[in-house]
Length: 254
Image (cartoon, rainbow, N blue to C red; front, side, top):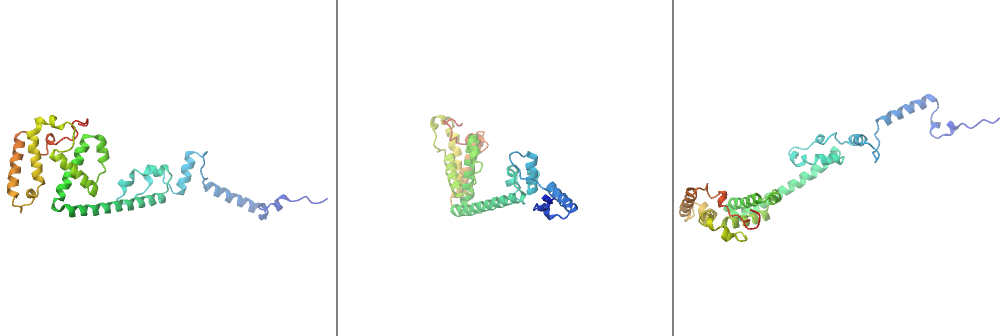
């Protein structure tokens, strides 16, 4: 009777083991490795299984687990939940943070250069022009929530923004901003507004701020006279809200 074939000896895997003990030991090692491994998640994986996999890869347990470099906390705080939802590892988060930091620094450097150009253009009148522009942004923001939201990110160190809002501010201060039907509605305010407009005009002159200007003393005297008149009429000064021209009068935005 011929010997039957030995299926164990012919199996390429099992044939590597000389005895049962070595096979059992290998099996135990395999079980140990499988116990420490995490399967790649798929559409049928539970949220716990998916989280376990990505945490093994380096994702923190919660959005707060991402570490952020000094000075970047505020900029990246809102990104943490999005990063965690996308299962980013700390290393991937760092790459994004570094890119954002470089972009922010480049933007800041560009604004600093723009501000220097503006200072060169405006000279001693730079602070005055910046104040006029800032006043325009504030006035527009106060009259419309939509405009306020849109203007929240305006940086007046940017040349284009500075020039635009300086022009708007000058129109508002002069009372010449384009409106609809403004003349008749302002009839009762003409005298007080005229005083305020004149004060603002004086404040914009070189003679007002330059003590070496031959018209400086005369300008200051007129300025204080008109400010005194406004105060005597019950206003807090030229900045009183009642004396600000309203560019939205007649267009439904008052």
